[in-house]
Amino acid sequence: MANLTAEVTLNNRPRGMSSYVVANATTVFAGSIVGVDANGFLNKYANAGTERIAGVCLQTVTGNTSAVPPVEARVNDTGLILTKVTVAGATSAATVNSLVYCTTDNPVTDLTTTAATSRAVGFIVRWHSGSINDVQLFTQAEQQCLPA
Image (cartoon, rainbow, N blue to C red; front, top):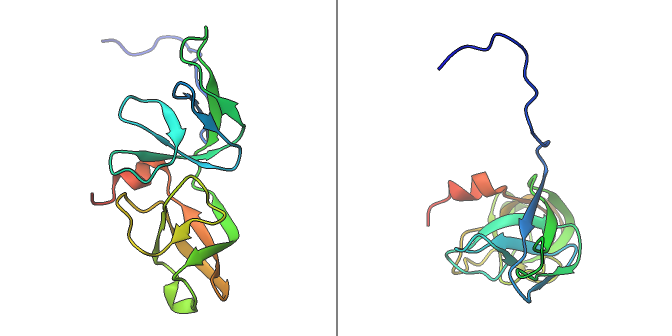
């Protein structure tokens, strides 16, 4: 090993957007919660204990792992705050900071405070009224730190 003696240009990309190869014959939709399966492919978030949230999909594509190059989808992995979404079980300000689970890839209708089989996908940061809340999604790194 040796210290640098001249400047170097590093290949890099900014944080906040990742790209993953989509599982074969799987359609992921823009706005859906997506996860990475045990094989490293992007899938619809399916509430499986082995799956990790990747973020929110930014485009609608259908995976074709035989294509050259294989089909990829861009994902916002910053831990977005979803504003004014319905969260089942979160009907008062007392639920702020409660963990939120998603039973499917649909963050519009399937968020709940009831523990699911997988890890939480985020937590409530603001209660508005009724079951309308703001939910901050976890990044992959944050979700990795949650207990199984």
